[in-house]
Length: 500
Image (tube, helix red, strand yellow):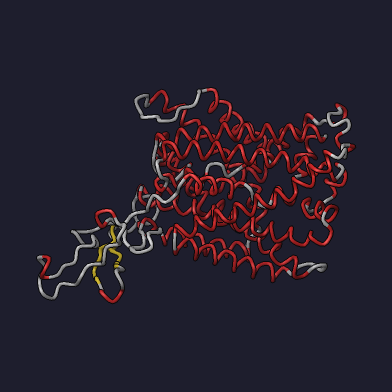
């Protein structure tokens, strides 16, 4: 791996007598055919299709297949639940459009971290990074991986339950395979993400098509009195919106890899708009299909809505549904890790994480260390941590910092009016979305003050961490190349020089 060339080393120029070198000089690594000027850097390999697959592949996880009943429970009626699904899609589009402006005006990878850093400075950005690193990202990856382990084994153990140790072993294998894939090749990571995204859309089509077929045949009894006023729970609507926004979360992941997007001025906004239209369309029609086949009472009683739906509509074919859910989870794991690693890479480049995390593999052009940094923490939380509780009191921080990032867009409109903005949204769009984020944060504080308080306290530990690790600067200063070995096929060996 290498971070940058030092004194011409690692530039791909052979230090041989024929090239002006001296006898006995060690040949430098061979330059890759597509390496521009021998630079070792992340390549722009994210096309429009790959960008769409990253967004759709991370938004559509296990939720739409397993438990969409939170919105129905808190909205009180079938009709109102569908309204909430549509409204959450529109609000998420507002957030995605705001991030499209941020991504085209600040063409750096890193997502939330980068935008908060640009708008409000390093301390606020580090607090966000700290919460991500120690809790949010490992726990989130572990939860979606547990769902993968559960559903990939379910067809094998049917009709019995899956042993917990088997789930954790399968989960560990899933996490390891995703880490390996992201370490080895950016191109193959994106190709597999495209394949998994199409498998998700196929699974959704398998639900939507027979559901709409039954609807057109006249199965509309579950939609009678869909907007019955007596059933609508106004006090529960904020919680329904909270659940809906969580289901749509993931539209921001393309912004984590902006530097690897081809022609980001056009690709980022277009990928976001196409993805959000597809996801909203799929979510609404999937719920219509569910309600066509199941009553509201049956849906609320189901532990896995897609499995119940398949059992009623497809008979023995329902065994395939857990496999599709597992593939959906694997796609979310793959897309999330691809995005997270770029945030850690950028934070290291900015001096907020150890410098080794900003190193890039010479031949594979992947941020290997940044990919692997989550692995031990994720596996540790998988086996010993109460991950679901951790997610409960950390989830509000996601919306707090996303709201802060979008507020930064409004702030920079006035403080940096001359910033190039190839894509610009009307100001009311970020204003409405940031208000929605802060409202959800307030709702969390009101509905669950204990867990929210714990999460807030964990994030505040980032303040002393910032002064200990950044202000007093006890990090490694530099990584100096000390040996170039021709038998290592172009890899550079580094020694850490600690300077205090």
